[in-house]
Every structure is written in structure tokens, then in C-alpha cells.
Length: 147
Image (cartoon, rainbow, N blue to C red; front, side, top):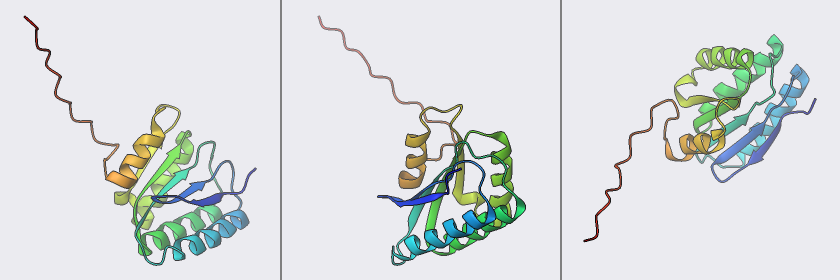
């Protein structure tokens, strides 16, 4: 399985974390992530975690993920989104985010049910448009008759 990878973006950091992640892979990922965040020199940032195809991970990996959540929030992360396509992975990440205290700043999108997940994720990270809230109705364009 591919090891998680971190990428700097215009809004902060994007993580690609597919498949099963061993504790050693999780530790290496987190150390790389720390370096990338520290390079932002204290600027606030957003985080998008693409965890599609991820399934349940071992408790030791979960411990590293929880540690990273706390560290990220303490080092400038304003908002984050985790994109999943597995109910098992969703349940696991919800438990970790609540235990780490980032739940209020993090949103979860199911890519198997939402084909527009990337736009909605970036809307939350960049513009604070909450994907969990209903979209307000747009005023209908009024047609004027030509006489």
C-alpha cells in the first residue's frame, strides 16, 4: 500500500492517506507533516485529508493520528476536512477527532455519496462554508416579459 504523502497547497496542506497504514508509516508521515507545517512559519492553514480507500488502522496508527490532530491544531490549523469512502474509517476518525479536541474544526465528506466533495472541502477550508449545513436557497431570477 502507498505511504501517506503531504503536499503544500494554496490553503495549507493536503494529505493523501490511502489504504492500511502501519504505525511506522504513520510516524514517518507525521514527522514529514511537522516539517511542512513548521515551514509555514506560524501562519494559520487549512488541511484536507484524502483518506479515500482507507480502512480501519491498528491502534498504534490511530494513536499517531490522534497525536497529529492535537499537534496540528496547536500549530495553526484553523479548519480541516477528511474525505472518506468507508463507514468503518469514518467511525474511527470521528472517535479520534472527538478525543483530540479537533471535532469542532473538522468536517467529514463521503466521496462515495458526494461527487462534489473537493469543492465542498475547499469551501470549508478557505471560505468557512460548512458542508454540514444546508445551502441557503438562492433567489430565483425573475423573468421580465418583453412587450
